[in-house]
Length: 305
Length: 332
Image 1 (cartoon, rainbow over the protein chains, first blue to last red):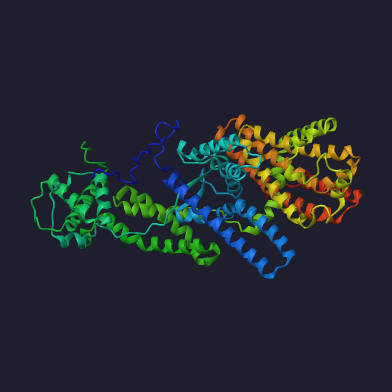
Image 2 (cartoon, chains in turn blue, brown):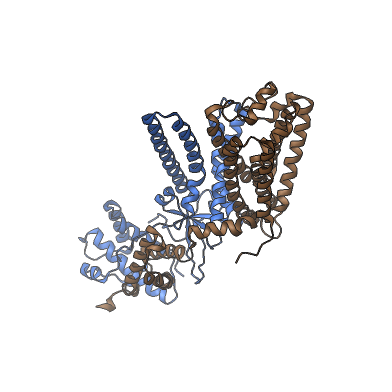
């Protein structure tokens, strides 16, 4: 039981270490609603942001390509010269609108996420907890111009008066800006800073069954003594929950073996690992929760005060 | 049997139906906006949201089921974004933008606008004088792709033709060229805005380049005694287009300025506030550039009389100035 449990606020990112005088990156950000409850928003990680960006660029590129092919097909099938000119104008405008307003259009809507962000479970939010305004969305996407598209233009204009030095500078520039989110606690890129926005994880979670269901607990027929239940704390309980929910038989066997050793299990030895773990989980949770009601929160197995 | 259940299990069993109801409403709302919900459901939403929030804080203090608290956190976050999210519809938002937000944002940038105008004007003047003295300077100021053959080596006749002919010099490609110019100008404007955070310097450089290009063009035409005609050709759309580029520079300056002199706020907060203000002005600048593109693509080709061109330029300029700076009532 050494894997760190998500959600206990102890995760540390290598990148967050020593950066940002006020706060370290722990993946979470406080957001207190007007009702006074902290929602503990999870910040979208760098990998998720990058994945969303790549997905969006692929969608945008594919959309423009299909559009261009349709226009070309229309021109080719009719063979009208006036149409080819109009098609050129339409293509230029479509490129402009796609490049500049694809992100704006989707993020200014109520879901506040482009298709790529939606696939990665991300959305844009205002950093101060207020409403996300259209101005903020415009500002964060206008900055995309200098972060990504400007250096990309240098590459495309190679050999048209843009020399190697400028391309090199552009590459360094975009490298700095692309890595920029790694150096602040909220994983904000330059556009987020200028617009005052953050990108948070807002996945849809399903409500899973309660593992401490009494019917399942009793049918196993296993009982644990208070001493056996005092072997672990909340952190281990959460890891145990993850192991049971994942349902990997090898991991369950290993964990069940270690628990049996640790608590000196002397009950029936032929119980299936899954049944044993489930029964121990329910009993441990009952014990820890009843102590919680008396104001005693036992963080982990080392917490013995 | 029920006392055999954990307290957290009973807590969940009592409230689960309400959570699922909220989840269903959110699914429906996220799929098609708030208009998909019936009035009853709309009224139900805030009540269910507060119930879920209170469930979340109770669950955090009594339940150690992390999948339950995780579910409630995600449910409350989704509901929070819906309940406190932006609710204005697009037509209302657009009307507000054109009636209040855009002119207000431009008015708030008046100092930066003057600075941006001064930089462009001085650059244009310097370029004009330099090209007047030695035509070779022309190439330093003007990108050959945009010049379209209008350079010191061109004949006076050719230059005159480019001012008035709408089919001979550039032929069928003219409308395409106008679309290209629009996207090019809009991109320059966006760069001027987006690069402002680098302490204003790149924005100032872009203003100098843009002003210099105008000055060099005018000097070229003036050297062939076509200065007056070239002014009309340029200003019929330039009154709008150059104004838009100057405003984009002003928007960039305001961000850079707030980074240098953040006042009582932190640098980050000051930049964010300036960025949002300036972004409104920038959305307007893109609209202005579209108008300029129309004037350039259609107006300039159809109207070839110099005085009419000047009259249109003066009218549009007066129109923009009145629209932005005419005193009006504050927004509600």
